[in-house]
Image 1 (cartoon, helix red, strand yellow):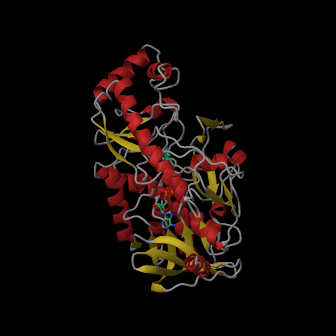
Image 2 (cartoon, helix red, strand yellow):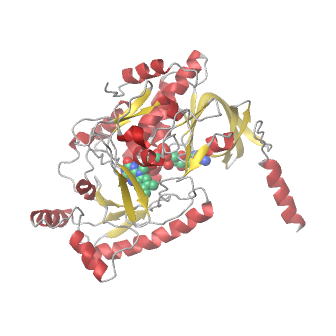
Image 3 (cartoon, helix red, strand yellow):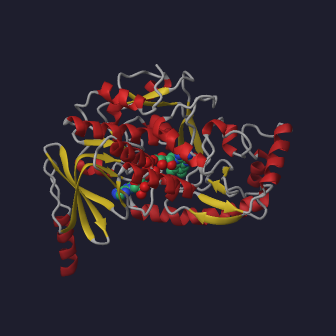
Length: 471
Ligand SMILES: Cc1cc2nc3c(=O)[nH]c(=O)nc-3n(C[C@H](O)[C@H](O)[C@H](O)COP(=O)(O)OP(=O)(O)OC[C@H]3O[C@@H](n4cnc5c(N)ncnc54)[C@H](O)[C@@H]3O)c2cc1C
């Protein structure tokens, strides 16, 4: 009992906080100083760190894994979702994203989104997704790492952000759990790219979790399969198309037959396989509902369930799907795919009506045209738009309320739920990162806070760096 009390009181001392002045008290074994600290090395964090460093800021990127890419590598999420107009004709997300893709294409590690519809098989095509980018996971890790190194970003892997100090509405330091103990990083500006808004949350920024009433989108554990006979699959695909056998759903006949036999995996409504460059398939067919992605116990349980479902999926595909008769599980993702947790409430929060109607802002930082699709229990809800024009994302939606030297990019930025369901895909996250990193560096250079930065200066810098913002 004594021991339990000691542990509880020690934890209380270590993580005690008060709202205005939040000071963490525990021994720090190493301290760093920089201009811009980026927390989280997923698509948003990569874009943020490289663009911050390129604009002259001494930048540290801290990541809990031993490599970059976030969900796009440790979650085995592929392909990069659309970065084009709905007809697949015009690339909307350019700038850093296009540069990265071009570098990967040069190495044979990606197919450019404007060429992606030719030749390769994709279950997504029938859903009207155009302009996808097929890519190789290892090429993404290597290329993004190289771009960070070239830009002068100080990479810090195996560093889990756990808490921050705040004073007078600003973050003064961030703390990381490492094998060496607790490391402390002080910065002028901070960028939260954790996907979950961990830093924003601890700093006291207001936020919304999921639907605002405790509900969140479904989680899925991605898997990769090998030994697929793509020729047989393509031939079957073609035959089904000719026979008009699709009904808007890929492999509908097999799904119906399996359903009748009580053998279709119940968690997902569709067969979702995507052909990778090396002939393997990325498969998104497991699903767990009502999982709080911030709770390690729930995530652990969902990962165990996901791997059991994966085994079932493999057996199902072998039995029902042409070309998959000999397929084998190559790997399951290191991390559960969490679609939704916290989103900050920003200086501006992009509304669903804004996106539906392509509303323009004085401070746009990127535009896109992705579907707004919410993954609910047993089905996907699509939110229709009133126009096919691109919609925009304003700088103010990267700025959380109540914290002055923090920007939030990627899945935790400020957008209403259906909008974030669209822009959380990988290309817009890179774009948000580019905007946040550029803004953070400009703000340091100009000696003003991110909220005082002239948005026109940011917009013109982004345009000069290749970001596409049609008038
Ligand atoms: C099931 C599922 C299917 C999807 N399918 C697609 C798809 O087909 N195509 C597509 O383009 N997008 C898809 N997405 C969306 C996309 O993968 C993510 O929304 C996107 O990667 C978010 O980027 P991010 O940089 O905001 O966050 P993440 O990719 O989640 O990256 C966050 C990074 O921060 C690190 N991190 C988190 N917390 C901490 C901490 N406390 N300390 C240190 N590091 C931390 C993580 O390790 C990670 O590297 C899918 C997502 C899911 C969940």
